Length: 211
Image (cartoon, rainbow, N blue to C red):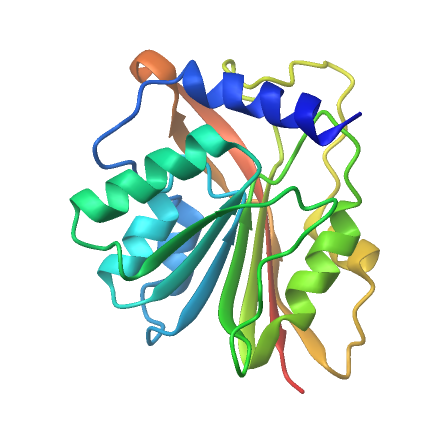
């Protein structure tokens, strides 16, 4: 499928959602990064931009990437309106073709929350590239759906959710250079469109580059 078709799909997804003035960050990001010193972060599949804005408020410089021009334009506008335009670089990328530039020394944090798509994407290759974009000591946080919420676009009852350890194995990183620091499946109460709530499972994988 062409980039145009994929972009049209995701533009439609975000255009159908109301643009919040201050989108919430993901819980797994805040619990992971709350105690980290600020540095350079990369948010893959930034969506509404809650994670990027949360990091920027805490002094991080954030590259926020998404395939949707609607999402990117909204985030750029929000960053400016909150006085964070100099800390958030919102960039459109089709990760099948391009990847955000690595800063000198590498990223301190790369996060990929719910980087799922109904279209072909070599996700393991994208996450492998992300791991290599880290500086030594940097963290890769991958949070995947472990269950479907009632409002999820994927309602396939036969959908399988690979475990964090399976995701780590698929990335295929050298254990001498990258260490898995967390691989678990916590549950939380999620809030969806219209304020609906549901209990969902997250698959959380945290990898540190050690060399």
